[in-house]
Length: 366
Image (cartoon, rainbow, N blue to C red; front, side):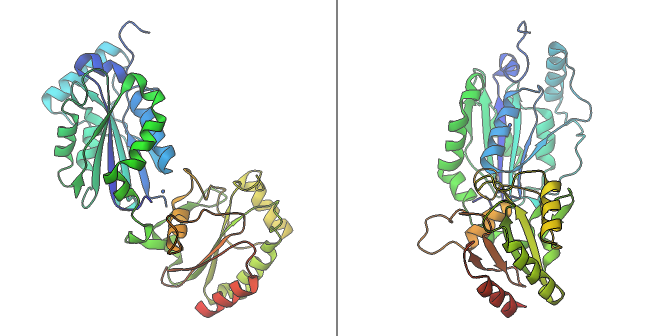
């Protein structure tokens, strides 16, 4: 549901000087592939902006990126206030310490910032001003102390003027943001504009199946773009399941057809009866020693729920039946998806479906 180019701009909005303290220590008081990025700036390690960003990440399964100025703000509260006020007054956009972001990798981008003195914190403004927003949708998000949004929404729209669309902002009170988890999720899921943007089928992304990144069992990056022109079998696996012996047949398929253009992605998952316990290394050792597997194995991950990897959102959406209101979740271990040489998801096989029929389809596509 997370595949139209979308940016949600999260801004912890605080009312002028007193509101600034909402995302910093109060004086005297001692937070879809997927192709989803949740970027935020927060002065405090426990700031409201960070908390909101983390909740959005949990709701979307996106990657989390902390925006860091090259020269960090002073830890002293009053010194930080003085520097921030001067930068805002003088229109300074501080240089960031982050590596450049490849925005082409993401369809959904959340950007969070505290509101300092009625506007966006300079580091977040630097990030937004340098972002490639062409064709994307920007959705401002604020938390506040006592002054509401103030000029945050207006200033976000100015910074995002090259975006395809800027949706209306929503504000949350900073003092109660840690009790607002449900409200945050409801806003993302039930706001008509956001829902329309986020629920666009993954297949509308320009790269389709070839637009995802995974991590191998030993921590290496695996891009599905590397499988262009191949027939691909994607299967979620487990090591202590009644279907685990299917590893033997899957390895046989790999040996028989790999040289003819078959690739296999093994995606271990512990969501079904906790039948894939152990570390990535332990799972890999089990498979290679017990079943002599040689096909690529990914790191253990979720295939359902808030933390599911974006690839699985795509696979389920692409095989959704016409009478289904939403794609069917993965029901158990060893559910299989077959992708043809053009990146089209051809068929979904349930765990108990015929392995002979699976092989027959693969042969017909090679």
